[in-house]
Each structure stands twice: as C-alpha cells, then as structure tokens.
Length: 199
Image (cartoon, rainbow, N blue to C red):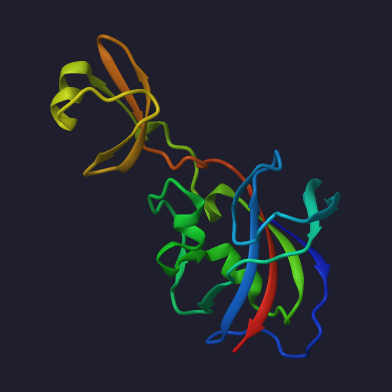
C-alpha cells in the first residue's frame, strides 16, 4: 500500500483482526477517476471532491453518496487474497470473484473499526501486476487460424493454455497480435473502503 486517506473514523473500539469475518463496500478507480469495480450502486451521488495524500503527492477523488448493494464478505488472514500475476481480465475477478480480494485491500482492513472509511492506493505490484511486453504475442495469420479454429477479430478475448485469456490487439493479412496482460496491468488503483461489519 503506497497511500492511505482516512475519510471517517469508526464508531466502535473493536478493531478488525486476523480471523474476523468482515463485510465491506468498495469502489475501485483508476487515476483518471474511471470506476472499474464496485459493489455500491451509484444512483444517488451527493458530491465528490479531491483529497490530497501528502505521502506521495497524489490526489484522490473522494465520494459521498447514498450507498446500497451487496457487501463483500470474507475472512481476514485465510488466504482469500490475490497477489502477483494471477490472470484476470476484470477487476471483479480479483475483488469479488471466487472469494478473492487484493492482498493490499485485505491489509488495509486490519485495525479498521465498523463504519470507518478510507481510501487506499495500490501499486501495480499490489494489484494487477506490471505491464509485461513479453506477454504480447505475435502469431502468423495461419497459426492463429489453426490455434482457434477460425478467424478471430480485433478486440476479441481468446485463450492460450500457457498465458490464459488475452485480447486481440491487431490483425492484418499476415499477423495476429494478442496481449495477454491483465487489462489494468501497470495501473495504480485507488480503492475506497467502508467497513460495515465485523464478526
């Protein structure tokens, strides 16, 4: 975790610790404020403003809204976390799919109290990993047609037994280029968290 902004303090002296079952709301944004994952409904925005993080000189967009949605529930310290280059194209595969969460997100919840809110900033190494040019593969048109048994199209998701899912980036008469990096590889993530319950 390379940055934390506490938005509100909790209302209990009980702090989240290893073995606790926690329920949270979360909103995941990129630095351009693009929301790439959330279990919060955005049907009633109130306002948002920029928060400054003096630790690294970064700005975050902080939101206050009427929230609703299904909380994400998981057990702290039971290995339900993601780190490194687990191959997922969508942030939901990390945050809510298969009961996995980012390791940086889990670490941020330790010590939080019920109703406390904060924004954390995760580096690429703590989330989708660094962008790796070696995961961009160029196939001949003939090889690509043979591998997938048909003509793929630009923007299509394809599968490779070694790299997992990838996105077709470029096609011409001679070659097919597929990028097997996660969609958000190399991106910093800003995750706003509200801790709803500790059990």
